[in-house]
Length: 526
Image (cartoon, rainbow, N blue to C red):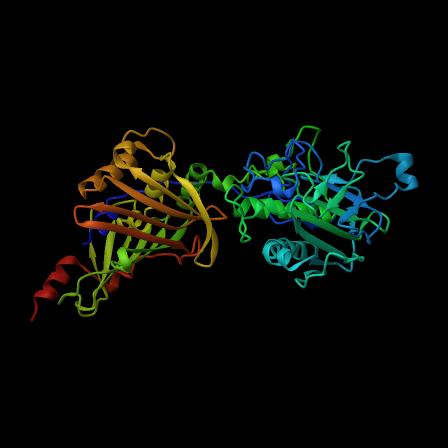
Protein backbone atom coordinates (compact mmCIF):
# COMPACT_ATOMS: atom_id res chain seq x y z
CA UNK A 1 0.00 0.00 0.00
CA UNK A 2 1.54 3.37 -1.01
CA UNK A 3 2.18 6.21 1.43
CA UNK A 4 -0.68 8.11 -0.19
CA UNK A 5 -3.13 5.34 0.56
CA UNK A 6 -1.80 4.81 4.08
CA UNK A 7 -2.47 8.44 4.84
CA UNK A 8 -5.90 8.52 3.20
CA UNK A 9 -7.08 5.31 4.87
CA UNK A 10 -6.73 6.97 8.27
CA UNK A 11 -8.75 10.11 7.50
CA UNK A 12 -12.30 11.18 8.37
CA UNK A 13 -14.53 13.93 6.92
CA UNK A 14 -16.79 16.82 7.87
CA UNK A 15 -19.66 19.06 6.24
CA UNK A 16 -22.03 22.04 4.79
CA UNK A 17 -22.69 25.57 2.90
CA UNK A 18 -21.55 28.20 0.36
CA UNK A 19 -21.78 31.49 -1.43
CA UNK A 20 -23.50 32.45 -4.69
CA UNK A 21 -24.37 35.65 -6.55
CA UNK A 22 -26.97 38.40 -6.78
CA UNK A 23 -28.31 39.81 -10.06
CA UNK A 24 -29.64 43.22 -11.09
CA UNK A 25 -32.95 43.11 -12.96
CA UNK A 26 -34.88 45.83 -14.77
CA UNK A 27 -37.84 45.38 -17.11
CA UNK A 28 -36.75 41.86 -17.95
CA UNK A 29 -33.02 42.68 -18.01
CA UNK A 30 -30.71 40.59 -15.86
CA UNK A 31 -26.95 40.94 -15.76
CA UNK A 32 -24.54 38.11 -15.17
CA UNK A 33 -24.96 36.49 -11.75
CA UNK A 34 -21.17 36.34 -11.55
CA UNK A 35 -20.79 40.10 -12.05
CA UNK A 36 -20.94 42.38 -9.02
CA UNK A 37 -19.91 45.47 -11.01
CA UNK A 38 -17.61 48.39 -10.36
CA UNK A 39 -17.28 51.83 -11.81
CA UNK A 40 -14.18 53.02 -9.97
CA UNK A 41 -13.92 56.69 -9.15
CA UNK A 42 -11.52 58.29 -6.70
CA UNK A 43 -12.58 61.18 -4.52
CA UNK A 44 -9.68 63.21 -5.90
CA UNK A 45 -10.28 64.53 -9.40
CA UNK A 46 -6.82 64.30 -10.93
CA UNK A 47 -6.60 65.45 -14.53
CA UNK A 48 -2.86 65.46 -15.01
CA UNK A 49 -1.68 64.99 -18.60
CA UNK A 50 -0.77 61.49 -19.66
CA UNK A 51 2.95 62.22 -19.74
CA UNK A 52 3.02 63.03 -16.00
CA UNK A 53 0.99 60.07 -14.82
CA UNK A 54 2.63 57.23 -12.91
CA UNK A 55 2.91 53.96 -14.79
CA UNK A 56 1.57 51.93 -11.88
CA UNK A 57 -1.99 50.69 -11.97
CA UNK A 58 -4.47 52.00 -9.39
CA UNK A 59 -4.75 50.09 -6.16
CA UNK A 60 -7.97 48.35 -5.22
CA UNK A 61 -8.64 51.10 -2.66
CA UNK A 62 -8.21 53.77 -5.33
CA UNK A 63 -10.46 51.92 -7.74
CA UNK A 64 -13.57 52.31 -5.59
CA UNK A 65 -16.57 54.56 -5.93
CA UNK A 66 -16.61 57.52 -3.55
CA UNK A 67 -20.11 58.75 -4.21
CA UNK A 68 -19.82 60.38 -7.63
CA UNK A 69 -21.92 59.16 -10.49
CA UNK A 70 -20.43 57.24 -13.41
CA UNK A 71 -23.42 57.35 -15.76
CA UNK A 72 -25.89 59.59 -17.52
CA UNK A 73 -28.29 59.76 -20.45
CA UNK A 74 -29.06 61.70 -23.60
CA UNK A 75 -32.08 62.18 -25.81
CA UNK A 76 -30.22 61.45 -29.03
CA UNK A 77 -28.73 58.23 -30.37
CA UNK A 78 -26.32 60.16 -32.60
CA UNK A 79 -23.88 61.66 -30.09
CA UNK A 80 -20.36 61.60 -31.50
CA UNK A 81 -16.83 62.81 -30.90
CA UNK A 82 -15.94 66.24 -32.24
CA UNK A 83 -12.27 67.18 -31.99
CA UNK A 84 -11.77 64.33 -29.53
CA UNK A 85 -14.61 65.40 -27.20
CA UNK A 86 -18.15 64.08 -26.85
CA UNK A 87 -20.57 66.30 -24.93
CA UNK A 88 -23.81 64.80 -23.66
CA UNK A 89 -27.05 66.71 -23.18
CA UNK A 90 -29.80 64.82 -21.39
CA UNK A 91 -33.27 64.63 -22.90
CA UNK A 92 -35.80 67.09 -21.48
CA UNK A 93 -38.23 65.38 -19.12
CA UNK A 94 -41.64 64.49 -20.51
CA UNK A 95 -44.57 66.71 -19.51
CA UNK A 96 -46.13 64.01 -17.38
CA UNK A 97 -42.81 63.48 -15.65
CA UNK A 98 -42.56 67.23 -14.91
CA UNK A 99 -46.01 67.19 -13.34
CA UNK A 100 -45.86 64.01 -11.33
CA UNK A 101 -42.09 63.40 -10.88
CA UNK A 102 -42.66 59.71 -10.10
CA UNK A 103 -39.95 57.59 -8.59
CA UNK A 104 -37.84 55.66 -11.10
CA UNK A 105 -39.01 52.07 -11.64
CA UNK A 106 -37.17 49.84 -9.24
CA UNK A 107 -37.26 46.54 -7.44
CA UNK A 108 -35.26 44.37 -5.09
CA UNK A 109 -31.67 44.94 -6.19
CA UNK A 110 -32.27 47.14 -9.27
CA UNK A 111 -33.20 50.70 -10.17
CA UNK A 112 -33.99 52.14 -13.59
CA UNK A 113 -32.18 55.32 -14.56
CA UNK A 114 -35.47 56.51 -16.09
CA UNK A 115 -36.06 54.54 -19.26
CA UNK A 116 -37.47 51.20 -18.17
CA UNK A 117 -38.24 49.68 -21.58
CA UNK A 118 -35.96 47.84 -23.99
CA UNK A 119 -36.23 47.68 -27.78
CA UNK A 120 -38.06 44.59 -28.96
CA UNK A 121 -35.69 44.47 -31.92
CA UNK A 122 -32.72 44.06 -29.58
CA UNK A 123 -29.23 45.55 -29.61
CA UNK A 124 -25.85 45.09 -31.24
CA UNK A 125 -22.76 45.79 -29.13
CA UNK A 126 -19.83 47.19 -31.11
CA UNK A 127 -16.37 48.57 -30.36
CA UNK A 128 -14.70 51.80 -31.41
CA UNK A 129 -11.34 50.21 -32.25
CA UNK A 130 -9.53 46.88 -32.43
CA UNK A 131 -7.87 47.29 -29.04
CA UNK A 132 -11.27 47.66 -27.38
CA UNK A 133 -12.59 44.64 -29.27
CA UNK A 134 -9.58 42.51 -28.30
CA UNK A 135 -9.29 43.56 -24.65
CA UNK A 136 -12.93 44.08 -23.73
CA UNK A 137 -14.59 41.61 -26.09
CA UNK A 138 -14.34 38.47 -23.90
CA UNK A 139 -15.88 40.27 -20.93
CA UNK A 140 -18.62 41.92 -22.97
CA UNK A 141 -19.58 38.64 -24.64
CA UNK A 142 -20.18 36.98 -21.28
CA UNK A 143 -22.58 39.69 -20.14
CA UNK A 144 -24.29 39.84 -23.53
CA UNK A 145 -24.90 36.09 -23.39
CA UNK A 146 -26.74 36.59 -20.10
CA UNK A 147 -28.73 39.51 -21.53
CA UNK A 148 -29.79 37.40 -24.48
CA UNK A 149 -30.69 34.41 -22.32
CA UNK A 150 -32.74 36.30 -19.75
CA UNK A 151 -34.46 38.94 -21.88
CA UNK A 152 -35.03 36.62 -24.87
CA UNK A 153 -34.07 39.59 -27.05
CA UNK A 154 -31.62 39.42 -29.99
CA UNK A 155 -28.60 41.00 -28.26
CA UNK A 156 -25.43 40.35 -30.25
CA UNK A 157 -21.76 41.38 -30.37
CA UNK A 158 -20.07 42.60 -33.55
CA UNK A 159 -16.30 42.75 -33.02
CA UNK A 160 -15.53 44.71 -36.20
CA UNK A 161 -14.27 48.18 -35.13
CA UNK A 162 -16.56 51.07 -36.10
CA UNK A 163 -13.96 53.86 -35.78
CA UNK A 164 -13.93 56.91 -33.53
CA UNK A 165 -15.97 58.98 -35.99
CA UNK A 166 -18.86 56.55 -35.79
CA UNK A 167 -22.34 58.04 -35.31
CA UNK A 168 -24.32 55.68 -33.14
CA UNK A 169 -27.72 54.57 -34.44
CA UNK A 170 -30.79 53.15 -32.71
CA UNK A 171 -30.18 49.66 -31.35
CA UNK A 172 -26.39 50.09 -31.07
CA UNK A 173 -24.26 49.97 -27.94
CA UNK A 174 -20.68 51.09 -28.60
CA UNK A 175 -17.81 50.43 -26.17
CA UNK A 176 -14.47 52.26 -26.09
CA UNK A 177 -11.18 51.79 -24.22
CA UNK A 178 -9.28 54.98 -23.39
CA UNK A 179 -6.96 56.47 -20.79
CA UNK A 180 -9.07 58.50 -18.33
CA UNK A 181 -11.96 59.11 -20.72
CA UNK A 182 -14.66 60.38 -18.36
CA UNK A 183 -15.25 64.01 -17.30
CA UNK A 184 -18.18 64.12 -14.86
CA UNK A 185 -20.35 67.22 -14.39
CA UNK A 186 -18.82 69.81 -12.07
CA UNK A 187 -21.86 69.66 -9.79
CA UNK A 188 -21.64 65.90 -9.44
CA UNK A 189 -25.04 65.35 -11.07
CA UNK A 190 -26.09 63.55 -14.22
CA UNK A 191 -26.11 66.52 -16.62
CA UNK A 192 -23.12 67.89 -18.49
CA UNK A 193 -21.01 64.77 -18.96
CA UNK A 194 -18.11 64.81 -21.42
CA UNK A 195 -16.01 62.01 -22.83
CA UNK A 196 -12.46 62.86 -23.92
CA UNK A 197 -9.80 61.03 -25.88
CA UNK A 198 -6.74 62.97 -24.72
CA UNK A 199 -6.42 61.38 -21.27
CA UNK A 200 -7.49 64.51 -19.39
CA UNK A 201 -10.50 62.95 -17.66
CA UNK A 202 -10.85 61.72 -14.10
CA UNK A 203 -8.51 59.04 -12.86
CA UNK A 204 -9.86 55.63 -11.84
CA UNK A 205 -13.19 56.30 -13.54
CA UNK A 206 -15.04 54.49 -16.30
CA UNK A 207 -18.51 55.57 -17.39
CA UNK A 208 -21.58 54.31 -19.22
CA UNK A 209 -24.55 56.09 -20.82
CA UNK A 210 -27.84 55.27 -22.48
CA UNK A 211 -29.87 57.25 -25.01
CA UNK A 212 -33.65 57.49 -25.08
CA UNK A 213 -34.96 58.80 -28.40
CA UNK A 214 -38.29 57.04 -27.80
CA UNK A 215 -40.43 57.65 -24.71
CA UNK A 216 -39.18 55.73 -21.64
CA UNK A 217 -37.12 53.41 -23.87
CA UNK A 218 -33.41 52.60 -24.00
CA UNK A 219 -32.69 53.09 -27.70
CA UNK A 220 -28.87 52.93 -27.68
CA UNK A 221 -25.90 53.16 -25.34
CA UNK A 222 -22.18 53.73 -25.07
CA UNK A 223 -19.51 53.08 -22.42
CA UNK A 224 -15.86 54.00 -21.92
CA UNK A 225 -13.52 51.82 -19.90
CA UNK A 226 -10.43 53.37 -18.34
CA UNK A 227 -7.36 51.48 -19.59
CA UNK A 228 -5.56 52.17 -16.30
CA UNK A 229 -7.17 48.95 -15.14
CA UNK A 230 -5.18 46.90 -17.69
CA UNK A 231 -1.52 46.01 -18.09
CA UNK A 232 0.31 47.06 -21.25
CA UNK A 233 -0.50 43.72 -22.91
CA UNK A 234 -4.24 43.84 -22.19
CA UNK A 235 -4.37 41.74 -19.04
CA UNK A 236 -6.13 42.80 -15.80
CA UNK A 237 -3.82 44.94 -13.67
CA UNK A 238 -2.58 42.87 -10.69
CA UNK A 239 -4.27 45.26 -8.29
CA UNK A 240 -7.61 44.61 -10.01
CA UNK A 241 -7.68 40.93 -10.88
CA UNK A 242 -9.70 39.04 -13.47
CA UNK A 243 -12.98 38.83 -11.57
CA UNK A 244 -12.95 42.42 -10.35
CA UNK A 245 -12.28 43.73 -13.86
CA UNK A 246 -15.01 41.56 -15.37
CA UNK A 247 -17.44 42.95 -12.80
CA UNK A 248 -16.32 46.48 -13.60
CA UNK A 249 -17.09 46.09 -17.31
CA UNK A 250 -20.43 44.39 -16.60
CA UNK A 251 -21.39 47.31 -14.38
CA UNK A 252 -20.77 49.89 -17.11
CA UNK A 253 -22.61 47.74 -19.65
CA UNK A 254 -25.54 47.81 -17.22
CA UNK A 255 -25.59 51.61 -17.44
CA UNK A 256 -25.79 51.43 -21.24
CA UNK A 257 -28.95 49.34 -20.82
CA UNK A 258 -30.68 51.92 -18.61
CA UNK A 259 -29.72 50.74 -15.13
CA UNK A 260 -28.84 53.20 -12.38
CA UNK A 261 -27.10 52.37 -9.12
CA UNK A 262 -29.28 50.07 -7.06
CA UNK A 263 -28.75 51.78 -3.71
CA UNK A 264 -31.63 51.82 -1.23
CA UNK A 265 -30.62 55.20 0.19
CA UNK A 266 -28.14 58.04 -0.17
CA UNK A 267 -25.27 56.23 1.55
CA UNK A 268 -22.81 54.65 -0.92
CA UNK A 269 -23.04 50.89 -0.82
CA UNK A 270 -26.41 50.79 0.96
CA UNK A 271 -27.76 47.97 -1.18
CA UNK A 272 -29.82 44.86 -0.62
CA UNK A 273 -27.79 41.68 -0.16
CA UNK A 274 -28.53 38.45 -1.97
CA UNK A 275 -30.05 35.88 0.39
CA UNK A 276 -28.12 33.10 -1.35
CA UNK A 277 -24.76 34.80 -1.42
CA UNK A 278 -24.56 37.80 0.86
CA UNK A 279 -23.36 39.79 -2.15
CA UNK A 280 -24.59 43.20 -3.26
CA UNK A 281 -26.13 43.31 -6.78
CA UNK A 282 -24.08 44.23 -9.80
CA UNK A 283 -25.42 47.78 -10.00
CA UNK A 284 -24.78 48.75 -6.39
CA UNK A 285 -22.38 51.66 -6.06
CA UNK A 286 -19.19 49.84 -6.91
CA UNK A 287 -17.19 50.38 -3.75
CA UNK A 288 -19.50 47.73 -2.29
CA UNK A 289 -20.74 45.82 -5.31
CA UNK A 290 -17.28 45.22 -6.72
CA UNK A 291 -15.74 43.61 -3.69
CA UNK A 292 -14.12 40.49 -5.08
CA UNK A 293 -14.93 38.09 -2.28
CA UNK A 294 -13.31 35.27 -4.26
CA UNK A 295 -9.97 36.71 -3.19
CA UNK A 296 -10.80 36.26 0.48
CA UNK A 297 -9.00 32.95 0.26
CA UNK A 298 -9.56 31.69 3.77
CA UNK A 299 -13.29 32.46 3.75
CA UNK A 300 -13.82 30.89 0.32
CA UNK A 301 -11.93 27.73 1.29
CA UNK A 302 -13.79 27.30 4.56
CA UNK A 303 -17.14 27.66 2.78
CA UNK A 304 -16.04 25.37 -0.07
CA UNK A 305 -14.96 22.63 2.33
CA UNK A 306 -18.35 22.76 4.06
CA UNK A 307 -20.34 22.74 0.83
CA UNK A 308 -18.30 19.95 -0.77
CA UNK A 309 -18.55 17.78 2.35
CA UNK A 310 -22.32 18.33 2.35
CA UNK A 311 -22.75 16.74 -1.09
CA UNK A 312 -24.69 13.49 -1.18
CA UNK A 313 -22.08 11.91 -3.44
CA UNK A 314 -19.12 12.70 -5.68
CA UNK A 315 -16.19 11.16 -7.51
CA UNK A 316 -12.53 11.54 -6.54
CA UNK A 317 -9.59 10.68 -8.78
CA UNK A 318 -6.39 10.56 -6.75
CA UNK A 319 -2.85 10.26 -8.12
CA UNK A 320 0.68 10.63 -6.88
CA UNK A 321 3.57 12.42 -8.52
CA UNK A 322 3.48 12.08 -12.30
CA UNK A 323 0.10 10.36 -12.23
CA UNK A 324 1.28 7.27 -10.33
CA UNK A 325 -0.74 5.37 -7.70
CA UNK A 326 -4.00 6.20 -9.41
CA UNK A 327 -7.23 5.57 -7.51
CA UNK A 328 -10.73 6.28 -8.79
CA UNK A 329 -13.18 6.59 -5.91
CA UNK A 330 -16.94 7.05 -5.61
CA UNK A 331 -18.24 8.48 -2.36
CA UNK A 332 -21.82 8.20 -1.08
CA UNK A 333 -22.87 9.97 2.11
CA UNK A 334 -26.10 8.18 3.04
CA UNK A 335 -26.10 5.30 3.44
CA UNK A 336 -22.34 5.60 3.83
CA UNK A 337 -20.66 3.68 1.03
CA UNK A 338 -17.79 3.84 -1.41
CA UNK A 339 -16.32 2.21 -4.49
CA UNK A 340 -12.55 2.30 -4.95
CA UNK A 341 -10.60 1.14 -7.98
CA UNK A 342 -6.89 1.44 -7.30
CA UNK A 343 -3.64 0.54 -9.00
CA UNK A 344 -1.73 -2.07 -6.96
CA UNK A 345 1.26 -4.31 -7.53
CA UNK A 346 0.52 -7.23 -9.84
CA UNK A 347 0.56 -10.64 -8.21
CA UNK A 348 -0.69 -14.17 -8.71
CA UNK A 349 -3.78 -13.25 -6.73
CA UNK A 350 -4.26 -10.07 -8.74
CA UNK A 351 -2.64 -10.35 -12.18
CA UNK A 352 -4.41 -7.21 -13.48
CA UNK A 353 -2.80 -4.89 -10.93
CA UNK A 354 -6.17 -3.29 -10.19
CA UNK A 355 -7.94 -3.53 -6.85
CA UNK A 356 -11.73 -3.05 -6.97
CA UNK A 357 -13.38 -2.63 -3.57
CA UNK A 358 -16.88 -1.69 -2.44
CA UNK A 359 -17.44 -0.70 1.19
CA UNK A 360 -20.84 -0.51 2.84
CA UNK A 361 -22.54 -1.35 6.11
CA UNK A 362 -19.36 -2.23 7.96
CA UNK A 363 -18.13 -4.65 5.31
CA UNK A 364 -15.73 -4.36 2.41
CA UNK A 365 -16.26 -6.40 -0.74
CA UNK A 366 -13.32 -7.11 -3.05
CA UNK A 367 -13.79 -8.02 -6.71
CA UNK A 368 -12.32 -11.42 -7.57
CA UNK A 369 -12.40 -14.19 -10.18
CA UNK A 370 -10.53 -16.66 -7.96
CA UNK A 371 -13.57 -18.22 -6.26
CA UNK A 372 -15.68 -20.43 -8.56
CA UNK A 373 -19.22 -19.13 -8.86
CA UNK A 374 -18.46 -15.93 -6.99
CA UNK A 375 -17.44 -12.46 -8.17
CA UNK A 376 -16.66 -10.86 -4.79
CA UNK A 377 -15.29 -11.85 -1.42
CA UNK A 378 -15.98 -9.98 1.81
CA UNK A 379 -13.72 -8.68 4.56
CA UNK A 380 -14.68 -7.12 7.88
CA UNK A 381 -12.32 -4.17 8.40
CA UNK A 382 -13.90 -3.18 11.68
CA UNK A 383 -15.82 -0.31 10.12
CA UNK A 384 -19.46 0.34 10.84
CA UNK A 385 -21.81 3.17 10.04
CA UNK A 386 -19.06 5.01 8.16
CA UNK A 387 -19.16 2.53 5.31
CA UNK A 388 -16.58 0.00 6.43
CA UNK A 389 -13.61 2.36 6.25
CA UNK A 390 -13.81 3.08 2.54
CA UNK A 391 -16.22 6.03 2.58
CA UNK A 392 -13.88 8.44 4.42
CA UNK A 393 -11.05 7.54 2.09
CA UNK A 394 -13.23 7.92 -1.02
CA UNK A 395 -14.23 11.41 0.15
CA UNK A 396 -10.65 12.49 -0.52
CA UNK A 397 -8.63 15.15 1.28
CA UNK A 398 -11.11 18.04 0.95
CA UNK A 399 -11.54 18.64 4.68
CA UNK A 400 -7.82 18.39 5.51
CA UNK A 401 -6.46 20.42 2.62
CA UNK A 402 -9.10 23.16 2.70
CA UNK A 403 -9.00 23.34 6.49
CA UNK A 404 -5.21 23.57 6.60
CA UNK A 405 -5.23 26.30 3.93
CA UNK A 406 -8.00 28.24 5.66
CA UNK A 407 -6.01 28.07 8.91
CA UNK A 408 -2.82 29.39 7.27
CA UNK A 409 -2.32 33.16 7.12
CA UNK A 410 -0.15 33.03 4.00
CA UNK A 411 -2.86 31.39 1.90
CA UNK A 412 -3.75 33.59 -1.08
CA UNK A 413 -5.72 33.68 -4.29
CA UNK A 414 -3.47 32.84 -7.27
CA UNK A 415 -5.56 33.23 -10.42
CA UNK A 416 -8.78 32.35 -12.14
CA UNK A 417 -8.13 29.18 -14.13
CA UNK A 418 -9.98 26.32 -15.82
CA UNK A 419 -10.06 22.83 -14.42
CA UNK A 420 -12.11 20.05 -15.91
CA UNK A 421 -13.48 22.59 -18.38
CA UNK A 422 -14.92 24.72 -15.55
CA UNK A 423 -13.89 28.17 -14.31
CA UNK A 424 -12.23 27.96 -10.90
CA UNK A 425 -10.33 30.14 -8.45
CA UNK A 426 -6.87 28.80 -7.62
CA UNK A 427 -5.60 29.20 -4.03
CA UNK A 428 -2.20 28.31 -2.59
CA UNK A 429 -0.52 28.37 0.79
CA UNK A 430 2.51 26.97 2.55
CA UNK A 431 1.39 25.06 5.62
CA UNK A 432 4.04 24.78 8.36
CA UNK A 433 3.02 21.77 10.42
CA UNK A 434 4.34 23.06 13.77
CA UNK A 435 2.32 26.25 13.27
CA UNK A 436 -0.76 24.33 12.20
CA UNK A 437 -0.48 22.19 15.34
CA UNK A 438 -1.06 25.37 17.39
CA UNK A 439 -4.10 26.48 15.39
CA UNK A 440 -7.41 26.85 17.22
CA UNK A 441 -10.30 28.10 15.13
CA UNK A 442 -13.29 27.18 13.03
CA UNK A 443 -11.41 26.16 9.86
CA UNK A 444 -10.12 22.85 11.24
CA UNK A 445 -11.33 20.78 14.19
CA UNK A 446 -8.80 19.75 16.82
CA UNK A 447 -9.18 16.04 16.00
CA UNK A 448 -8.73 16.52 12.27
CA UNK A 449 -5.85 18.96 12.81
CA UNK A 450 -4.01 16.59 15.13
CA UNK A 451 -4.50 13.61 12.81
CA UNK A 452 -3.32 15.55 9.76
CA UNK A 453 -0.20 16.88 11.53
CA UNK A 454 0.63 13.52 13.11
CA UNK A 455 0.42 11.48 9.91
CA UNK A 456 2.36 14.08 7.89
CA UNK A 457 5.15 14.29 10.47
CA UNK A 458 5.51 10.52 10.57
CA UNK A 459 6.36 10.75 6.89
CA UNK A 460 9.10 13.25 7.70
CA UNK A 461 7.24 16.31 6.44
CA UNK A 462 7.82 19.65 8.14
CA UNK A 463 5.78 21.77 5.76
CA UNK A 464 3.67 21.26 2.67
CA UNK A 465 2.45 23.46 -0.16
CA UNK A 466 -1.26 22.99 -0.83
CA UNK A 467 -3.02 24.17 -3.98
CA UNK A 468 -6.79 24.08 -4.25
CA UNK A 469 -9.13 24.98 -7.11
CA UNK A 470 -12.66 26.07 -6.13
CA UNK A 471 -15.45 26.37 -8.69
CA UNK A 472 -17.72 29.41 -8.93
CA UNK A 473 -20.42 27.35 -7.22
CA UNK A 474 -18.07 26.89 -4.24
CA UNK A 475 -17.46 23.21 -4.83
CA UNK A 476 -13.85 22.05 -4.64
CA UNK A 477 -12.79 20.79 -8.07
CA UNK A 478 -9.12 19.94 -7.57
CA UNK A 479 -6.39 19.86 -4.92
CA UNK A 480 -2.68 19.14 -4.68
CA UNK A 481 -0.35 18.67 -1.71
CA UNK A 482 3.43 18.77 -2.23
CA UNK A 483 6.16 18.21 0.36
CA UNK A 484 9.61 16.77 1.03
CA UNK A 485 9.48 13.74 3.33
CA UNK A 486 11.65 10.81 4.36
CA UNK A 487 11.35 9.26 0.90
CA UNK A 488 11.88 12.50 -0.99
CA UNK A 489 9.28 14.52 -2.81
CA UNK A 490 5.68 13.49 -2.11
CA UNK A 491 2.70 14.68 -4.16
CA UNK A 492 -0.99 13.97 -3.76
CA UNK A 493 -3.31 15.16 -6.55
CA UNK A 494 -7.09 14.91 -6.33
CA UNK A 495 -9.84 15.88 -8.77
CA UNK A 496 -13.49 15.97 -7.74
CA UNK A 497 -16.55 15.70 -9.98
CA UNK A 498 -20.06 14.25 -10.41
CA UNK A 499 -21.41 16.03 -7.33
CA UNK A 500 -24.75 14.49 -6.37
CA UNK A 501 -24.70 12.44 -9.57
CA UNK A 502 -22.94 9.22 -8.55
CA UNK A 503 -25.23 6.21 -9.14
CA UNK A 504 -26.57 4.74 -5.90
CA UNK A 505 -24.04 2.36 -4.37
CA UNK A 506 -25.46 -0.95 -3.15
CA UNK A 507 -23.90 -4.08 -1.70
CA UNK A 508 -23.34 -6.96 -4.15
CA UNK A 509 -26.03 -9.68 -4.21
CA UNK A 510 -25.42 -12.09 -1.35
CA UNK A 511 -25.17 -15.06 -3.72
CA UNK A 512 -22.22 -13.50 -5.54
CA UNK A 513 -20.12 -12.95 -2.41
CA UNK A 514 -17.64 -15.48 -1.00
CA UNK A 515 -16.48 -15.37 2.60
CA UNK A 516 -12.89 -14.59 3.51
CA UNK A 517 -12.31 -18.24 4.40
CA UNK A 518 -13.69 -19.37 1.01
CA UNK A 519 -11.36 -16.93 -0.75
CA UNK A 520 -8.32 -18.18 1.20
CA UNK A 521 -9.28 -21.80 0.50
CA UNK A 522 -9.63 -21.06 -3.23
CA UNK A 523 -6.18 -19.46 -3.21
CA UNK A 524 -4.67 -22.61 -1.68
CA UNK A 525 -6.01 -24.90 -4.39
CA UNK A 526 -3.49 -25.82 -7.13
